[in-house]
Image (cartoon, rainbow, N blue to C red; front, side, top):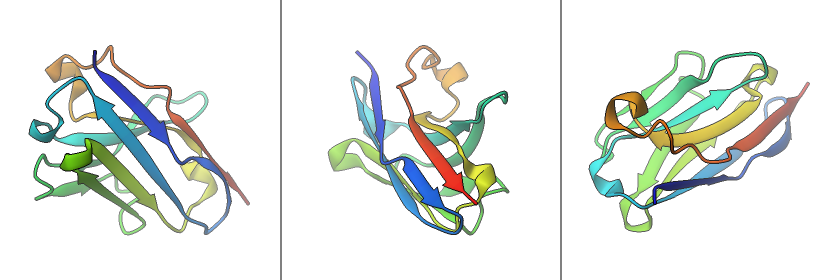
Length: 120
């Protein structure tokens, strides 16, 4: 059974930092590019960052470039998101999943997410 368990969210002040973690299970994690997504109230879920299967490449939403860093540990089946210089517009529920879940059949496997709140 595919499962994603996100953690590390919380309340942080403007300009603060958080590190999100995602533990994945039930599939060959090391073979998949992984992504972080976020969904704010009243908005569609959006792609935040992606990392290739071997950590050889990363991509970021323009809104987080230079502030967020995605990383992974294939030995632990885990992916991380270091978020610095947080802004109120970063507030959302953050999820991890494989990259392009609609194309890879992972659309039914979202975790509960982790809430990030940024106070101004």
